[in-house]
Length: 430
Figure (cartoon, rainbow, N blue to C red):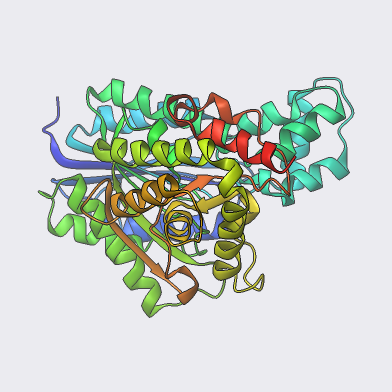
């Protein structure tokens, strides 16, 4: 068996979409950083580029800077299949055993193009006539943010158009994808005999309490953005070079490093489109935030007759602040996600006549402070984010749309009263 390195990190670039060129740039950055005996980098790249055949994909073990030590051409490859992700992680980690394992998921979650949506629809509904209008809508609407193609297949599978509309309109893909992500990380952790030291999400909207809680048993530290990710993605040169310079650092320090390098890079290189948020979470402490959020949910549910209007005002206030009165679009609000800290701060300082809600909200704000609970570090760029704490939660506004029936499948919904609070909130508004 090969000697163990300090770290082996897989960056899984699922760019078989309109981000193919940007994915290639990230691939090149990682290639130029290269591997050392102590830090080994592997990459899966799946994309469509002018210099590649359609659907070409390959996986690599990087060697010295600028060189590939080992590669495997995959041809037509479904990087949106969670089982392919599991297989690729096993491929790398078995060849390059390490004391700690990292996984970075690079995608735009996954940004379906109309042709691709139509192709998946045909596979999901054999014999059925594909609807080009539906495919176009699927590619451009929030549900196209699904991380895995299996989610899109599940959305498109029902035969009745009304059922498809319900499934799709309810979902950002978070519920189904989060469950898939738990299965993926669990399978990888089992294959290496230990939790993943770090899971990095180079994809939009994944700094979410539901996601963090779902993967807590298979992942020690999570780094993600609760907002959209700029097209340049992570600054891999700065992040991975810093890891190589200090390979003895553990997951907590590396997670903080990612947040620091990410925010520093975009402070110096403001993105032309997209916003900058990043948080590092210690999932060994996620129970503290979950418990605080559960108590807040209980207080809101019990006193909903007193605080329903206040909660609505707090939601609207957070949205107005973060979107600059609706001028900054798109945003996480299009996907029904809300910063927990913004909500809790608003409730704690509101004119609500529920002391239990105010107290629970104040405690939630406290738990979100870096170093107190699961939040190791939080960084952002933009005054509109000055109230956030880095972690979002699902809170479908009652005056817009109904609660996703898939939400109750999540571990967070099962283990807390957030789902019941959502129901009480919607019932309050009739």
